[in-house]
Each structure stands twice: as structure tokens, then as C-alpha cells.
Length: 112
Image 1: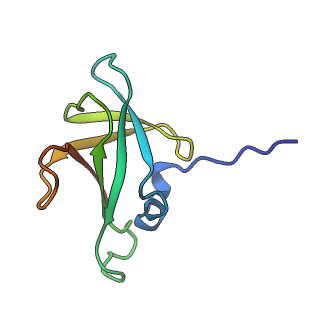
Image 2: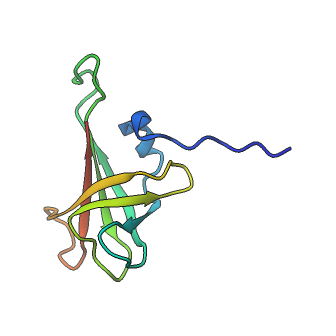
């Protein structure tokens, strides 16, 4: 009998969880139009130092991605499609990365 592993829900997201996925590709379905899925590589996970979180709240953290598809993402909500996570909508915005490659497109997602 094959046992299906549970997919991670957004309520369970944490900085430590995503650190295990550094270097992986995350795919997103743009919600505003019928374009193809967009592929983003997770290149950085950042957040406050341990112990700086407010008791009773999730520790805030930021995920930084680099575009690995030929088409850019629009600002706004996009549906995550990943084998380890439940499908859900993420707000992604394009950012400028100091010391980043100016030929690359970078995106971030912020959770708190």
C-alpha cells in the first residue's frame, strides 16, 4: 500500500521549512491570465534573528526568487504549484536586488 505524504499548508510555513528548499524551482500559475506556468528558483530565505519573533505570531520571513522562465510575472497573486505544498495563492512582487545580476528578474514573497 502506498502512503501519500501530506502537503504543507500555508499556516505551517516557516523560515526553517523553506531553508530546506533553497535552490529548488517553484512553479506558479498566473491568476490574471491564461499564460503558461512561471518557474522561479528559491535563492534566499531571510528573517529576524532567532528570538526576535513576537510570541503567539509566526516569525516573519522573506523568500527571494530568480526568474527561470522566459516570461515575467505580473505584480499580484499567483497560484503555487509544488509537490511539497498545497496549492494556494501567493502575493509576489518584483524587486531590485543590490549586487544582483541586472540581467535577471527577482521576485519576493513575504510571510508574517
